Image 1 (tube, rainbow, N blue to C red):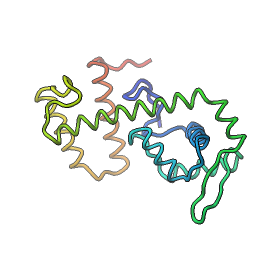
Image 2: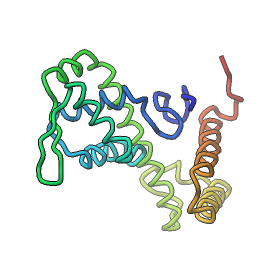
Image 3: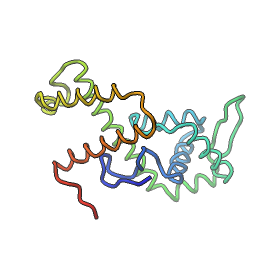
Length: 191
């Protein structure tokens, strides 16, 4: 998968909304530094911090936790069928060594969460038939843009459920459209 720089969310995330493995491990360590967690809790925390943009699957979280345990960066306490993960002193040192990157990643997740909330408000206004909302002038966008948003929603609903390749195709289309909107219609420059 290729990374995208300067895309809709400012870069840093790979296509498919995934972290690089090492980055995810550092983020998990930082969360464990805040408090011990179960794997499912980590998934929910990442979902909340990103406004639903990044929701790692158990198939991503648990191998990362296993790696952290095997490398001595985290330890596990069995609580019946559940496992509670805690950071070790070695893990704390790793977090401190990478604090700047971790803070930057959390800030990026927060910005993405804010943008996702904004997009949700825009689409909610369509559902309620409003032309004006908390966003004032933006919501007074005229009929063309509102009709296009409704057409997009309808197209997405008609195509759902989609396969992974179809989801990737749709995501690429939406990312290209968002990038073009952000660039004000200027063609993307490649360097």
